[in-house]
Image 1 (cartoon, rainbow over the protein chains, first blue to last red):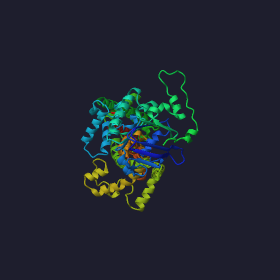
Image 2: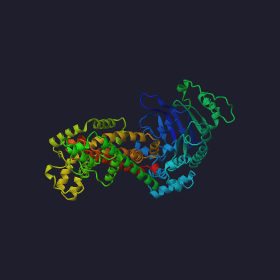
Image 3: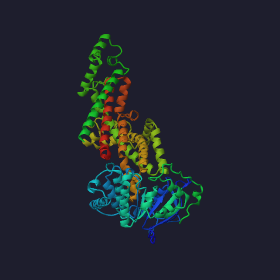
Image 4: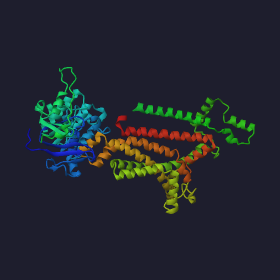
Length: 283
Length: 334
């Protein structure tokens, strides 16, 4: 957990969709080095909103933060022009479902190459060569052929590997993976995660994995934030997940089915209203 | 690909046959006595019967249909009672006038409508969006004959910017030899630029008004198509890649609504070709809409049947073109 040189520092981030709405994220703070951080929570806990707020992709929402620093750039004051140079180049995001996150009418290779050509001046041939090499790096066999396919012609697992290729092609410093495997078959899930994990470790990329899958973050993250109702209720090292103290985290863990477990109904989480107010116990 | 073309052609043939059945049935069930329309009220029984037999109306219906098919296949659509000329000649004269008007109108309407629709969607809920929605609602709700008259009052009688009714000034009629029937093309071919300018002057106002009313519809549809696409995940992907707003909108979102746009623009164009009767009447435009309506009112059977056939063929043609464009714009349909 090399936290000597943080890539990203966020202090007291709050996000509201509309002036009178309940905040989707409340006073969230996090700091990320060249490590793998997991953000876990249920649907609607605000975890995806965090990723999009960091990339400043929420033009209609009210985003406030005491501090939002990405390397030398202050994300809360950066102009849209500065953001265009950061997005896709130094900070990228892997989206959930390749069925929807790839443009259905463009060849997948062209979409990968576009990520490169947006930030580097180069000929089409060079961009193509870079993209093909990257497709190979995400273990796509026959990348030259796949380059010219359309999204509906590739499988989900392959689509997600193409997405990963697209988002790692520019050698970013920070990658946010927003539920990167929840749309995939269980059989290809592990394969895709291993590829992503390998590349992230090789290149020393800071990774934030947003997920609702506790076992996934346990195996693929160094550190985990547990979110409930827009705030962080607990932060711990992934290996200490079983020693979680917060009742919400304990409840989530208890509600996990286990192979070889009893056939009793799984326990149901009893939500306490004080979790909403008492949160943010960790820095 | 070859199979797709064969299927397409077969589809067109079946539709055409259905269309012919339809026009034939329309001809038979029109509440007009075609014989009476020809011979007049005072004709004797003998004259009536002779004409009745001449028209083949004494034969069984299916024989009549066979003869009708035979005639249509030989481009013989009969004679119009009203004009006394072969219907085909009439159509050759009125259709180009309408095509000229409708084409102008759809070019104006589609460019305006698509532009405004995209602008409204991109600036959703801002004052731009509200303004565009009001403009589009006005285009929908103002009757075209009324805007036509106001337009004439304002731009022709008041400001004198455009020509008045008809396809050109009375002065120029007959000056240009008719080759294609399209006045703008004919005058350009013969190098008579004065006539060309007069024709342009006359077409611009009715075409703009028609274009505006099509634009109203196209704007609303474009806006909703575009909003739908802007909410898709691949748009987020494009923005995550660092594409600017402009690139995201045009390269990704807009590229994905082209198929839908083709459909609605083709339909709008079709309904313009079918005849903008009201605007043609207000502007004394000797077009297809007027021809169809006046023949319908007096029960000119041959002419009406042929007009319905022409409208049907126009729509079949436009559908065929949109199907082809689908294949160009959307790889999933290939």
